[in-house]
Length: 282
Image (cartoon, one colour):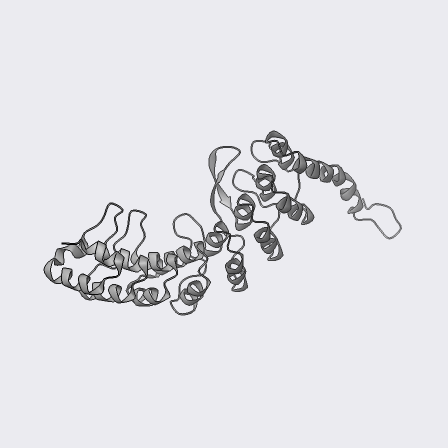
């Protein structure tokens, strides 16, 4: 006899009904990935099967090996009909997690529905500090990030990230750090336009420019320099964007950063507060 999960994955409603009648204990069984029949139904977007399994007592709060519930899987895959069925059974935190899952895969319509109809929190950050805006940026979803910013998403939200040039985790990353680290120049520009601090440091002093320079992302480097990023600013280990570009063999980036570094003394003089008579103020 076919396994219940196999029937669910095929979307075979009649077979699922038959198996539920003859083998009701299969409702709670998991596969090697920790996936129950309900989790598979939600992931595949089989709304009628989701309703059927819930009616037979399936546990909506069951989680797979990643820790995702049926609601989170439905949101991640963009299944709005399934999401509507599952949301009434979800806690506020689960709705927030579903929002992050949807944002990470760029599901604009589903994100809007969760915010407008399910009262999911715009700044829900889970245990790792990554808000829906950060999740959208990590996925490279510019249109969704723009919508979240339009709704007031915080560009100063802090989370963690992996420092590629030091081989360790670092905390205090803002959305702009993640955009620079992922080489998403359009998102870098979007976040700068939204008021992101161009040289915001992480806990270890890393700036977005350092990340862009390390990766050799010329477009992001130019945008950050244009916004006033300092190529000579040091992190906790005395590294600068300029030294990182040199160390990692980015000659075209090094040239850009060196040119800006040479211009900085003159820029500082020109910005000095002169008095009307032409002399410098004491």
